[in-house]
Amino acid sequence: MESDYRSSRREAIVAGIIFAVACVWVIGTCAVLGYGQPVHSIGGIPNWALWGIFLPWLACFAANIWYSLIFIRDEDEPNEPPPAGKAE
Amino acid sequence: MYAAGTQVWLAFGLYLAATFYFAYLAHRKTSKTGFMEDFFVAGRSIGPWVLGLTWIATAASGGTFIGSPALGHTYGWSVMLWICSYMVVATTGFGLFGKRVAELGARTGALTFPDLLRDRFDSRAIGTVSGVAIIILYIAYLVAQYVAGARVIEAVLGVPYHWGVLGFALTVSLYTAYGGFRAVAWTDAFQAIVMLTGVLITVFFAIRKLGGLQAVYDGLESQTPDLLTTPGPTDFLPIPTAISFFCIWALAGPAQPSTITRFLACRDTKALKRACFLIGIYISLLYPCIIGIGIMGRVLVPELAAADHATPATILAVVPPVLAGFVLAAPLAAIMSTISSFLLVTSSAIVRDLYERNLPERLTEKQARNLSYLATFAVAGVALAFALQPPDFLQFIVVFAGTGLAATFFFPTLLGVYWPRMNKAGCLAGIAGGFLSFLLQYVWFGTRSFAGFDPFVWSMIVSLFCVVAASLATPPGAESLRERYFPKSHGQAARPVLRLRAIRRTMGSAPSM
Image (cartoon, rainbow over all chains, first blue to last red; front, side, top):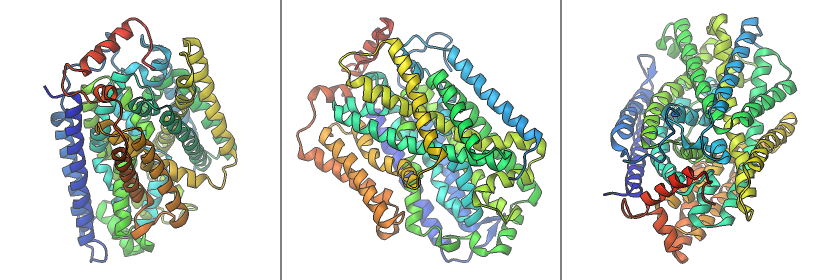
């Protein structure tokens, strides 16, 4: 069975990949659509911000739901079982 | 001063009363672990809601609620790009450090961030160096938070600055010393709810008053079109700076000793997963709205006495008076939650890392209790003394505490917990390389170093290189350490250690030294 260490390492690598993809998407889109380009409004939001910030934000939000609830392995034994009725 | 109505005073009073009530509840709920484990990591019993909210409340400081909207007011939409890497902070924070740090904390009995590094490399020097760095830099950061809090109270309530600083220092240190980590975590959770509620109420009333986002867009365009695009007025955010800040918010925040300590208090993996999920939602609501307050404030209140007044001025311009007091508690909540966390991290560095771990014998329960209280009040007193007359070099130390500390410790910590080949020499080289690189760049170039990047980015690269080069150039660490930290599978090392810890608990003894 995979050790805690190996599963944590695998999860850390995927977190790093999500960070890198978000960075490239955000900076790339904003560099192309912002920075000296004519700006126009889409529903009151500048176009570069909509495609370069809010859309990737939505994608990262979805990625975080998948990552936290599905991808992170739930270890079979808690670090320490809390005393009965003591969970906060 | 913008307002000082009775309702505002009343709301502040209620907010403080609620904070103390949560601290009282936390104090009553003590676990069966030893004092130190209970005071500094709440007996490792923190569940998902409190874990998530204390994590974000610690990360969101006075700068988040006062400084960021001020930037939004001054530089418009480009600040949204400046802050936007918060979109991945929950994933990077919990994914890179969360589960692994929680596991190691349970396995080794680590109570503090320096404990973690010291035990991993079996090095007293590493524990002492990181403890001293935390004490110096976090006291400086505390001073900055006191100053920010007193300024908010001065602007909104008209309380003289010195009384505001005194009130802040006394209030927060009282509940921190009274309830320890559990009180800090519970009040943080309450304060995080206050923060988000306050921000959402303000945004709702601001959009309603302005008549929608298109009206905000048109209002900014009529003032100056630079407010709508990047890099913003006066070349605020060139591309290298945008890349730098994408790395800073997503990596520096989660690598702070104060945020990593949160994971040591985590109950189990399930709590961690849920906290990560909750924080993803919380951050996605909070940060765009905080910058939105500054941007809408530019249209609502274009002229301010100081840019730092953007948050209180916008709140008072749009929120009905009956709600304004509660909403104005949001920035105070952000500041107080950060202060309490830093106070505890600093006092734990004194008691645990510099004192107890250098003694031949463990402290008794009574000694640990008295020393912890004393250290908490002493740290608050030192920060108070500096805050009454902030030194000229404070800003530099604050910048270092914010990003330099992460540049110094990010890779030594990350590779320390994931790379079996890393050794003591690599850790010390990474700390020294990151620290010196950041210091020299900041002194010589300020906030824009080579190619326009922030010193943080280059310091991270230097630190990474130092860790890898020094580790490979020197013999690997002891085999026993590697087996303890990097077991190949379940049943070889991890589980027996967890069982031992449970046995130790049952017998009432303290974590391993």
